[in-house]
Structures are given as C-alpha cells and as structure tokens.
Length: 399
Image (tube, rainbow, N blue to C red; front, side):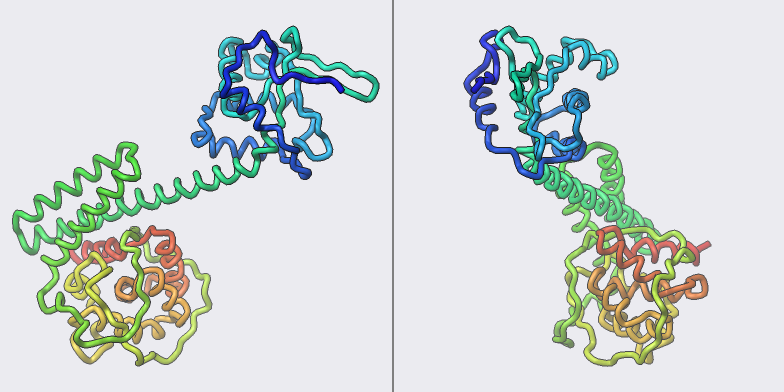
C-alpha cells in the first residue's frame, strides 16, 4: 500500500495545522456533496469559518479542475493536481504570490488538504489499477458539508433578525417623527424638541452599519419615546386602564416593532373571496395598556371618524374601537378568518385601527379582505405599522 503524505518535508507545518488536517480523515459521506452547492453555502458561512471572498474565488477555481459535479460518493478521487500557472489562468491572471497566500488560507480553514509529493510537485501516476496523486485534496468539503450548511443557516437567521430589527427601528423613527409633527401643532411644548432630536439622530445613525446591540439600544429609546408621546397626546379618559371593566381573552401580540407605510390603498391584492357574516357580540376583546398602537386613540378617532357612525355609544377606549371594527368588518367584506389572522399578527387594537382607516377609503379598495391579508403578511414579517396609514389620512384632510 502506497503512503501519501499530507505534506512534504519541504513545507513547514505547525502542530495545530497538522492536527487539523489529520482530524479531517473520517470516511466520506456515501451520498457525496454537490461541489457548487458546497461553494454557495460556504459563501454564506464564510465569516463564521474565517474565510475571505478572495479565498473562495481561489476555491472555485480549484473546484473547476475536478471533473465531476459530486464530491465523494462513488468517486473517491478528490485529489486535483493543477499547476500554479493553470490556477492563476483560471483566476484571470491573479499573481501567483497572491494565489498561494489564498491557498494557505483555505488550508488553515480546513477546507482543503495538501497532498505533496517528496519533491513538492503536483502530479498523478497509475500503477495498474491503482492511482497515486499529489496536489490538493478536496475531501474536507464533503466531510464538512453538513457543518457548513448548519453555519450557513445560522448566518441567514442572524441576518434576517438584523434586517427585521433595522427595519423596525427605521419605521418606528418615522412614527415618532409623525407624532412629533402632530404634537407640535396641537399641543406645543418643549418635549417635542427633544423627541424630534431623537428622530433626527436615529435617522443619521441608520446611515451607518450598526451592530445588533446598537440597534437594540436605539429601539429601546424609540419605544420609550413613542410611549411618552402617546401618553401626552392621549386624553386622560382614554388612558384609563380597561382592566376594571373587562376580564375576557383576546389575541395578544408582542410585536411592538411592526411598522410600514401604505401609500396607496388602491393596490390591494384580491386574494380572498369576500364573504359577509353576522357580527359577533361575545366576547368583547379586552385591551390592556401594553402593546397599544403608537398612534393615540384620540388621533385615530379624529382622523377615522366614519367608524363612529356604526356604533351607538361614543368610542372612548381601545376595546370599544376593537368591538366597532368587529361590527364593521363583515359589512366591508372581511371574512372572520382574515380578521382573526390580522388580530393575531398585529394585535387587536392595531387591527382595529387598520379597519377604521380602510373604512375611510373604502371606495378605493377593490378587495378589503385581500388587502387586510396583505397587511397581515407584512405584520407577520415585522414590517407594518398603522401609524403611517393614520398620518396619511390626516395629511389628506389637512390638504
């Protein structure tokens, strides 16, 4: 049996690198791995593996020298032996010194192994049915494919969390800016200057690449600022807790960071067959002081006054608005399933504000049920707020 050294005596090897290469010697997975899929997953997980994009470019060139698409499986011949000149040619003329530096990075990351001949050359020889090859061993790629996929999935999930938090912060800033403009006009006080400065500073901060911790700190400040603005603008009679009046259940949602602007209500997706049904009277949704919309109830009622005409009593609390929306939505052609899904995704209070805002422009919406479902999907993705809808109606009335 011919022994193939991992590296030659001519190439310096430290103990850590030698241990890393020797550890990558378990049997190949029987199904192998698609080399281009491996490369795609590596592109996503490269920062977790300590690999640069230039090093992956060199790896792509090395993979092009492997004749098959599947690494491993029925074909265990995973040692390629291109010359430095051939590799540089496939790298569009990359300098040889640069290419060798990136090759060393791939070896340190444990993605390839060096199988050097005694004289350091790369070649293959056959002895009857046996083949002896010296060059670059690609076997770590199929062996570590499951690990690479797991790292790539974690990276995608972290990126999605970051993007959702950044989007939430951006849209919360817009909500705060709208409330500051409204509050400065209706109730002038020094408070609005401070909150306005926070909105401006947040906009400047979002121009930079922020860390997850920075975004979370900004979000906390915005939540406090929005709560403060809402408490100032909300009439005292509407700030009273409704816990003393109701003890029923309702769909509660902790997504206080769902924000989006809906500039045109005409673009509803008609993806639901509109259906009418009898308004439900029991149970009344119970509303707490937590997770309320950032828009004050007084501003909602002043802007969306049409919904008041459908209930006999004056709306003074959030639970009354939710009940009014539950009465109005079948008349608008919103099915029970669409209404319940909206309450789960947005929270009942914000869903009621959406229905009230839709009622103001009911003649412009071709499919209210489909439109509500499209907003529900945005809320499920953390990309919706009723605030911009109310602000847009307020600007229309002021025009």
